[in-house]
Figure 1 (cartoon, rainbow over the protein chains, first blue to last red):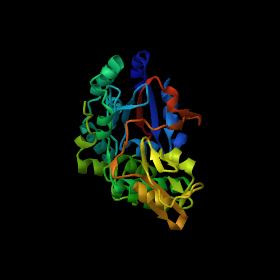
Figure 2: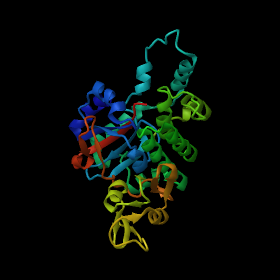
Figure 3: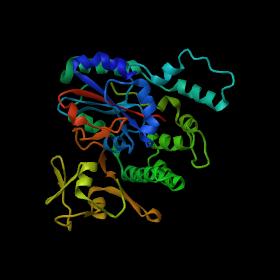
Figure 4: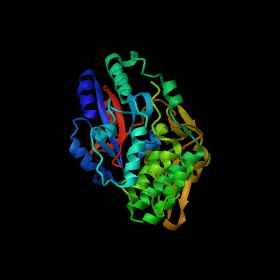
Length: 232
Length: 113
């Protein structure tokens, strides 16, 4: 869906770069990239470096970078004018034999608060007006709006890195111990949780290895809080 | 970053974290943090970097591994300068973000999960 917006913005000097945060690398993300066949750079971050460098805590999140390589918006929930999940669900009749838990996930997903058109409007304004756009922030605002990083967040990142390393080495049990620590130390980080849950179950459901799962955590925190609305 | 010894190569540390080891200490943008006792050349003890830069150090003795987290006690972004990052495309070809310098970029993180 980013391609439609990219086709509109690229002639005005704005390029889209998509980055898959996937420990599984091209094996996990490649087929989605092949299906989308994007004209813009589509990269894979198998080490979740963007989590650490920018403070990405869920997907989709985006940043804006100006011509000089300066961030003019820090990470925030980013939708290309449409919500990918909503589009997938639009007009789809739910099969009668859908498992109850999946049905419950669909119900919660529908409650997630997104204003995808608002982000695209802001991007169009930046494409048209550049540094004069009201949505292009000063360096001080970018820093101030970026996530605070506590010693616990740093420790969580170190555990997550060890978890990924051991997962790739085939030691799933040892990896899980580090993932659990990352989840405990940085409980607001959906990226750490969703990536680890996905190794147990593609639908990120309950498993014996973690004391939480996507549906339980969304219900506990409230679906309306799942994506913080961008401050636009 | 994950390490097999409690020490880190200077170039690897700079490439991964953006902190360059100079005679005056660990430096990023216009900020330098002194590293007392650091050798003039060669690998740096990660315990020193952890202590001076507020980077969590986690060890996994059973697997002979160490991991250094990012610096803490501030905001994730110490400056608005986009970190110089190079990532592969789906065919493994590296792509440097700086190759788009002169163009505005909206960079979006997504995932298969």
